[in-house]
Image 1 (tube, rainbow, N blue to C red):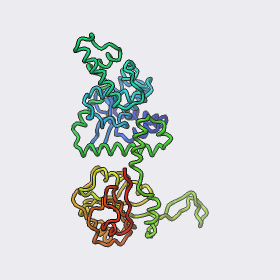
Image 2 (cartoon, rainbow, N blue to C red; image 1 turned 90 degrees about the vertical axis):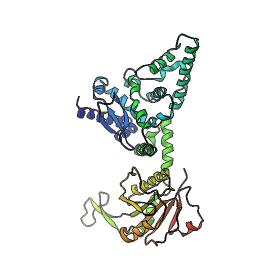
Image 3 (cartoon, rainbow, N blue to C red; image 1 turned 120 degrees about the horizontal axis):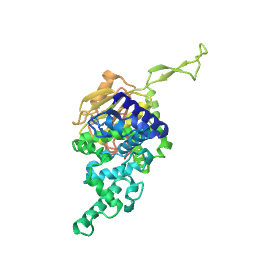
Image 4 (cartoon, rainbow, N blue to C red; image 1 turned 45 degrees about the horizontal axis):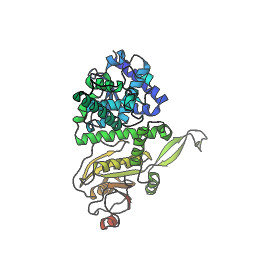
Length: 415
């Protein structure tokens, strides 16, 4: 067994997915991969705060996934589990094994059956239960649990000698035996049970961020080919990530006070002096101080929403310095396109520290302040344009403090 060889073969599967099913290929590129003899087969596991990894048992890879098509199918199977967030659902269902079976029924409907090794759990194996295709894990869990309880009642009352239909026998065999496919879910139950509320929230945010990034990368056309449940999830995430402002326009307004420029090579515009390409053109770059209210009155969901907006600011070309603050600045860092795993603060709220920092030290083109607005009006007068982004449930408009906030005030969209 060679770890390097196995990881190269995983890369080959990634490339094949990128060519045939780009959504799943891009999703796989966002997962950590490891070869780990401690896992029984191949599956997804938690890899530190807010991260998910694909763990592979080398012996299983070499001895069981002997054909490239099986490697493709099993990896896509695991990606579907993660994308549909099954890992986050395990503690919401009382009967763990029934949940495991239901989750496999869901994902294996979207993997070509000739790409699944022997033993895969399929909807067709339960045709006597008349379960509808294309449903979510809750639907299959409920139906399987009903059939399992029915089998138990018949056995305990002597109405039959055991499960009667092939589907019932298949179900009871899975529940009473050691099944290789279901072993892959054992880590989910153990690891999720050990997470704190904050760690769980970080994991949810991380998965949502990956899904949003991948859907933006592949585009609406590719998303339209995905399973219905996954499409609905992506639409809901897209709604949550819609910016409250047209940041391209807002940044143009901030740029009006900026004299900072830089040169960029371009092949579109020949050099006027020499008539050659590449030429150069002058571009503005907005230097923004973005204050994030991390006081106790701002929820984790609202902080997540702040960073969704900050991402939109950054992707439209601004140079962003984030300051996390409650009554004082707790932390500062350049924004590079990713939200932090946690924020510092959670005390009271005052607006003065970021404005004073901008005046004395940073000298930005503008200040953007994300907050719920519940604090006294600032005493510090900003020397730079200020835009206040107020949470949907934050400070009401047309109040005394609202009118005293200097600069432009915008209520963020609800949802």
